[in-house]
Length: 322
Image (cartoon, rainbow, N blue to C red; front, side, top):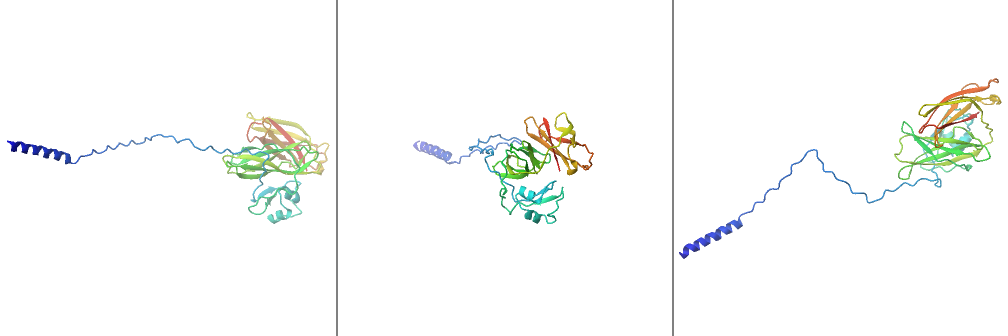
């Protein structure tokens, strides 16, 4: 009987050991089913650095002149090689070298000159003739339809003398504060009378930087001995489109008390002003008729003046003759 119980106990121990030593099966993990076209949204953490703001260019900063890339200039009535060289900070010899077809004795109005600008990679110095200090307005710029940029800056003649060879340099600075482009701005007339003001204009071709700041500085302004009395305008009429983006200008330049046989051209410059008093556009009309007739009493003019930006609030007309 004792042997029977011993055998039964051994059988239980053997079964227990068999259960503990058998391998344990780990259930396979369930693979999630992918859902097409669904993304889990998330947000980026806020930046840890504060963006660097571009400092506003002030009049205390020195203007940078154009780089050594040559540009062109169209010869106007009254131009001389010396005057052109002085205006663009070069010499007559350098202009002649850049334009081998040019005659030093004859300048044809309307012809185009290549203006050199010094050695490659160097920024030219300021003109050797110190310009008469004149106040400038803040530049105002308008994007052009083709992607370029038109900029205006107004110069004021507070001197007790007539001025000529007036020019300014307009610089564009990109978002990093570096200069992106630079152009010389010129007036539509040659002589600026005492107490008068005139806009200077410059065009920047595309492409333009997305963000820019503008700065202008006077480049040249010299006293003039040329007598430039403005011609009176009569029968002036100005009409506007409904949105005041276009002005139609007509009138007559009175020649009754003028010896018109002494000059060959009459200029009428129209300046569009917005409600803030800033230049919104400019147009130059040039006479194309014979002015030598002694019985000529007046010259009629007609032209359209477009705004490059805001509506036109006022029109100013200036005359000049040669």
